[in-house]
Image (cartoon, rainbow, N blue to C red):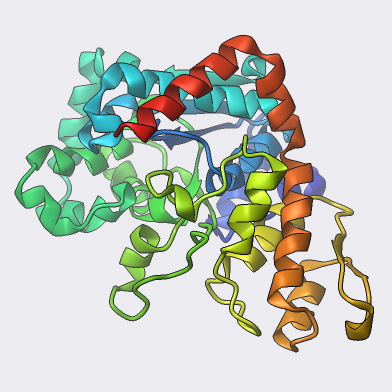
Length: 359
């Protein structure tokens, strides 16, 4: 097994459960499979770009990758007003974006939840999972769908969601489950019951969540688990998100309003964009233009250097915002070009934009 392959798969992640299991998997199997399930819930923002780029890494590393469009899951979760047809269109939009960033449809297998739930074996697995977990455990796992445990009191279908996500993993029979840290509880639940039910114990790889542009609005009022719900970038709140098709002007305008407290790194979305997106690309350098009286333009070669300079007060928040906006706009240029050139993808994007405005 190449160490470069292992590095490509794990770079930019916050957790691998477990690293040794992953190493052994790559050493012993010729064909390694992975999956990521996503809720088709609207327009693609840069928070999703974190896992999308990790999908690209894994495909480049030779992993057989399945992308599960969790259409029924999104319906249960009341996304897009529960309009299943619109949800399916949102799934196709995600596939368009992946192609725009260099993950061709031919390199991944796209599966829709509609296909899974039509098989009686799927529901057989789900019931086996349900018989081996407690109600309390399922309720605690509701944070994977951005919900609080008490919300299941008025809509029992919410309790089916975590069971479906575990069933997805077993039904697809994959070796690796990829997702943001907000999906950890479902992955751990799958690992806990796998051997008991005769399924393989999946390796879980988790990517970071990107704080919304407005920062954390309820710091101290919620638990760590709920932070995944409260602070991450959200499609349903456009003011907290930069979308992958946004123009440079829109990106700059949103970045100017972003939460970026001086000398603070934790929950600072502008620094996080640099850490999780910009500096993940080898050789990237951030050009920060400053007035001559403050030292003039500087070129920063690593995220660690950027954070140090910012914490020391040597980089002003506005200068950081503008440098980040320029770099991000350049990074997203291929996505904008894709939607400009692809009439069908652009028409779908415009339809979703209209739908999200009216909901």
